[in-house]
Image (cartoon, rainbow, N blue to C red; front, top):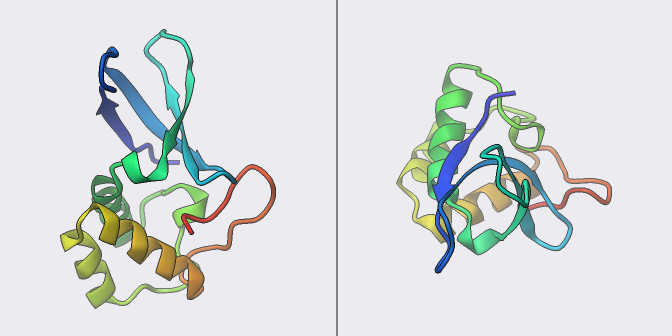
Length: 119
């Protein structure tokens, strides 16, 4: 699986390098840090996750048929105009576009207790 990594510095905290791991039932994004600091697993509110940067990562991978996290592997071809809109989207709009893609069957449904759609 390809890895989406980004740097996050919470207010009053140290900078952490995190990578996407999963979407959780409570609507948070599960991230993994490999910087030797604790906690290694971090739960981040979905609204604080860099959805627009993540979207660029997804589109680049989709265009070259590269690996992406399972929950973002297209179940069918996503129209180019939607991909272009995703690239230009703001943080909230990118999250909404991904939510709509999942709702309309372009992305796999979220099942089980460990994951939930960005719905």
